[in-house]
Length: 101
Ligand SMILES: [Zn+2]
Image 1 (cartoon, rainbow, N blue to C red):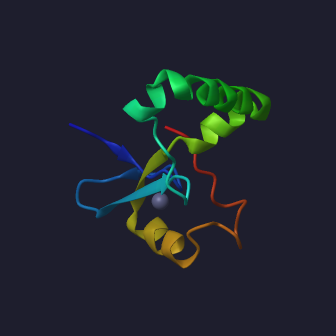
Image 2 (image 1 turned 135 degrees about the vertical axis):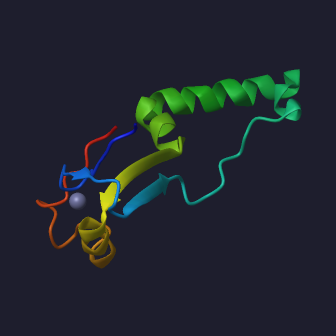
């Protein structure tokens, strides 16, 4: 039997209780340009190496930022209403301590 624990209050959610799932997707607002076959033409290899140099100079962080990240949380009913009132935890940041798992 799968047991669910509320990710906000760390309380176990009993079978008879309602369980709510929060999914948060964080991705860049602007579409990233994927490499196409055209980019692989020799003529473009130079510009690609330039792009790679740019990425290097910007550091790994920019690559990390371009990657979509999805978080999934289980919430009990009480925490659901708390979450909906303040999804970003801006007014109660110390109460919202989501761990990454
Ligand atoms: Zn809870």
